[in-house]
Image (cartoon, rainbow, N blue to C red):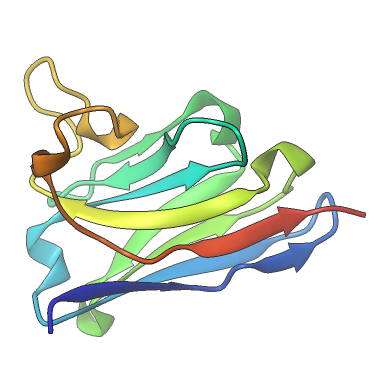
Length: 131
């Protein structure tokens, strides 16, 4: 079965850290760009970070310097290390696999392109940052 499974979410105090995992099964993750997206209640989904097939990385401005995306091809898993978490980081986090983080004029990692461009999505994991 082809799927992505996120894990690692939870409740953390402001300033704390979490590491999200996006584990692939049924396909080889290293052949895909993998993006992390989040959606907070009442807000649109937004792209958080992306790692390309060649390991180029992309980050939205609000997480630059705090979050790090990486991949472990041996484990068929992509990680998002999130440090110095803020209440504004509270959301459901999803990972998705697609062809490229960015190509031509299209920034797929922002999550606003044709839904058919995103090959597979995980089910999401909740991250809550609160004291």
